[in-house]
Image (tube, rainbow, N blue to C red; front, side, top):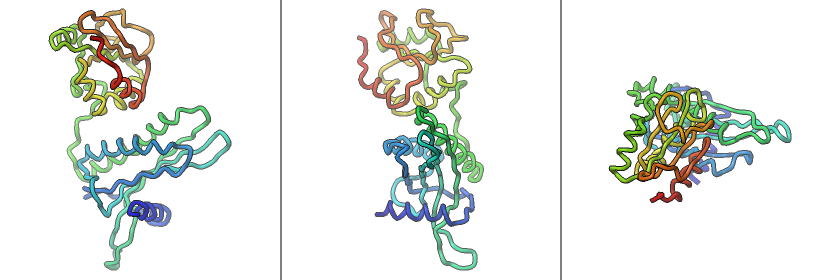
Amino acid sequence: MKKLFFLLLIINAALYSSNMYTLSGVKKVYPVIEIMTKKVPQEYKEMISEELKSYLDNLNIVYTGHDERAFAILVNSIYISKTTSLINIELLIGEQVKRLDSNIKTFAATYVTRGHFILNKGDDLEDMFEDTLTTLLDKFTEQYEEENKVIKLVEINEDNFALEMKYETSYKEAVKKAKKMKKDIMLVLVANYCPWCRKFEQRVLLKKDVNDIVQKKYIPLIVNKEKDEFPQQFNISFSPVIYFINYETLKSYERIIGYNNKEDFLYFLRKNPKSN
């Protein structure tokens, strides 16, 4: 009932209230996620929740327990044709605020931002959805940090990915470490100007639950095949490509070609036994 009450207030606020668009002093929120369309699977709630909590953690915003300030992500769609729909994602904060001319409180949307994309039959819904959601959360983060003067955390990108995520960048050094620790190597081959490589780094390898397994089971190695040295037996025309290499024989026993989403890659990591 509490969640339903919040949802009704949020929808009402989004439709009828004026927005103050301020994020100053927002330290705690109550997350609300609602998918109000059959075009987007309800299972996406878990992905949205995980992504939202990751951003809130980075901003040190508390989201556990009850709070009168709701942080909502609402998803709906607009029918365009039998094969085409407009998918809307709305990110908003709703809370009780005092009117200027009295002490009476009213529920208002104090922050609202929206994104949308056209979904045609056969399109990659997951990729388009994550792109739009990430854009909204990035926009929120930028404004929040500006208005609260938060010290910005280190941004992990292609230039500092290996250092921040504790990946080796030298094949020879990775082999030495693997033999010493008796752990197989997970070789990630990337390339310049490869958008799927960047997405795989940011959306999959960067996630804590993925990295925990990778660090525990393997010596992770990331190599730019356009500038770094590595055995050419692993060089193919596709990128990204991930090899799992036996630390004794230095031969690959598993290979993943192209981008895999987080859930698919996690499933593989959890079921994939070590070669030895």
